[in-house]
Length: 580
Image (cartoon, rainbow, N blue to C red; front, top):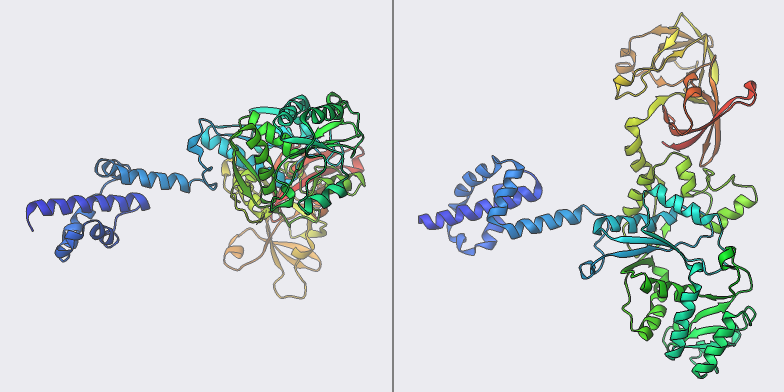
């Protein structure tokens, strides 16, 4: 082997060793690089017996470099290969796939288009979580557009407009703009008139049943060939409210023989007698259907990418007819499946939750039994945790199951280190103490942060224990370790103090349980997804501020909601259970 070949082999080995080390963020391995090395340099194969010896020394020198030094050296030797690794790393950082054809647009513009018929349930969080994440990734733009053009069957709730914006803020996002479709009726009318002039729409007075029969048989409506002037006059009469509900509609002229009957001459405007609840829109009677309204707005707002449910694929196809008439470019579309949530007894449906509230079966939108964002917020769950779980679902076209445990895990990572510990005994049994135990218990506020100090819990002459923690007198070993206090043994119905030596726990497996003193205990009602749980907390809980988070040891995290003390005998602290 001549010197030139040896130098070339060393250079190629170094490159492949650096690629291996940087890609896997570890030391390079001679065996791992031999295949790629020989594949890129087939002329090396005749020297296969010698190359491992050469490679060993080169790989050793590469492994002596720090990680940053390896990247710098690789950039000198193989900048293109390093760029590929970096691109893979960037892609791996994202749970969401790249938006289609994102590089073709100067700015990524997206919209969240809620129906304001109530505050958001948990499933609603997926859209803002995903488009908000995309906005951050692409330094883009997104708006909230309230699609409130159905004042009858999906009647807007006047309080929902602000409630939804509050839910969005809770998730950690602020829209670049906010629109109400009910403010834009004149814009939709203008485009309808233009569509009529283009021969793309006609007024139709067929009943729903009549048109359905014609449509399904591929026959044209008898009104389809009206002259433009007549259509304009009748549409003007619609706008003026001269027709009653169901008497006249404006249809988009598509393909009456289209293979999909749902796309045949679909309705763009209809008459609705029920006034819109917003005073600004209450005089209108001619209302656009969502496919027309949304299609016009998406173009006028410069929307580049639409994310919508897989069940709305026909919407894009209907709107494409309108876009073709106007010679507009249709936005990129990402379809996804529905989110399914099985952790609640209450259906994840705005109308269902609203009905339960009206019947008094739920206390409100923030009842812990309701699968709503307001409920999660009151329970002390951070919006950031919800976003993380939603983004983790990706954008699959399949229906996806959201386990609340994924939200809980993300939230636990956010709150665990900052949340102090307390004791809460659920419907406990009172047990007397004997044997001169310490007068005060001092469990730590947080096991990982000694600097925060300890709790000062007066012990008294009896404690409250959860029923399942009380030793069975029939068993041989009736010892317990009361956390922060010491070791006890059950004798004649009392817990006799035995030791302060923690070795009985470490070496003999004595159970560690939580407790509260019988004197000074704080009555506490904890509201949970399965209903209210009552019990007693340690005395210091009465001094916690509302909205403060605690971890009740061996029970779970909770948010202090309020202290009720109208009458001293009925004083009670109310907490909302966060999660385990």
